[in-house]
Length: 282
Image (cartoon, rainbow, N blue to C red; front, side, top):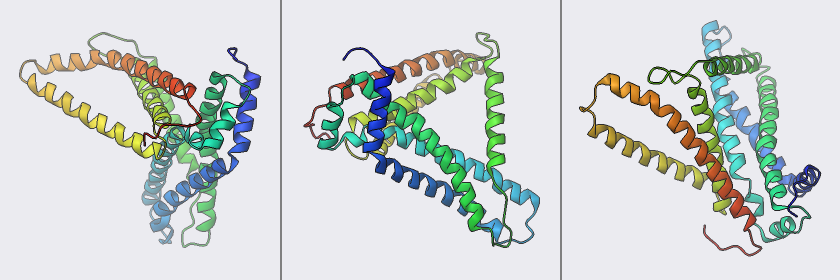
């Protein structure tokens, strides 16, 4: 099958979800516990103080917002790293290979389940985790309201800044303008696709192994960049260095975007060359 059909892809998503519903249920439980314990630890000290100062309570609310965001980043990257985790068993690979759909339909179906599906699951678990924390601390000395308004405020503020930055004009050598927003998007896309590639390469512990590889490459890149910068430290004026850093933003954005496309394409190639009996790499 070479033609792409949305109907067949939807059927693949439905069948894949039904065959792996326990995996998604376990993910939901893990997500809920992660958000609940993150909130419970942050608000524990406040709930034991009957008359906590407003500034202290508000600081805990902002800390809760940070916990929501950080935990969500790890969970979402973990979700994309599990895109091909369910295919590590022989019987499940046979089930996928026997589906009457094209490779592209199967690949996109798995990708959507582990991206959009995981995003939606994370949102639901944030709501449930916040509600569960309020319920558990309901009889404490200082029961607190929901931390979700602070989270929505943080998202709105960041969205406003992002939209405003995208509206900035680009002035070579002076201001990267909307390239700053492009750099953020390209960095996120490259990181996301890197974990997708790790899911296709590693048979076990894909999230951990991919994260370690990414950390190693980051440290290596920082070392090389620092070494090169040290060689030219006294060769250029601070103004020339600032101009170089500004002009390098578009180059970095395009490079990261192309790397993201390359990682995604390579992931698809590995998926299409999947066999029933796989070689043991890891």
